[in-house]
Image 1 (cartoon, rainbow, N blue to C red):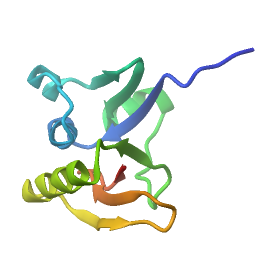
Image 2 (cartoon, rainbow, N blue to C red):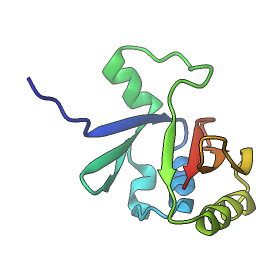
Image 3 (cartoon, rainbow, N blue to C red):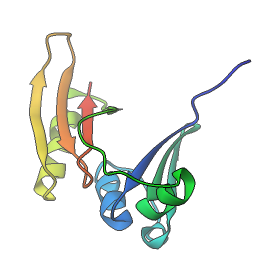
Image 4 (tube, rainbow, N blue to C red):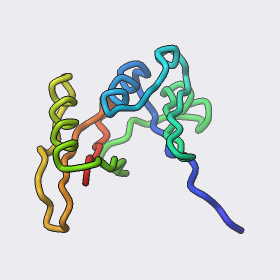
Length: 125
């Protein structure tokens, strides 16, 4: 049997707020998705999906508010300069920083921000 990772899904409290954050990362998401219970980004055959809490409840039968950091979404930037620029743009839009850009001991430039649902989002080169 062969499987392929095709989509990562995020449960969101406020679809518009979440999509606005991912738009700030540079993703083109139609404004018409703001009021939908499900939305997706398709990038080179990989999908990032967004579902409202109501959809999660209907699929899983219930929904318990998660605590703690359980999964990392990491977005590759083109250069150190682009990472720094993107990080600053995100913070200027009012999103929360978790860790400012730094040169990690493993050789990458890294920064971490929070999306509106508190997920830690990594930016790296």
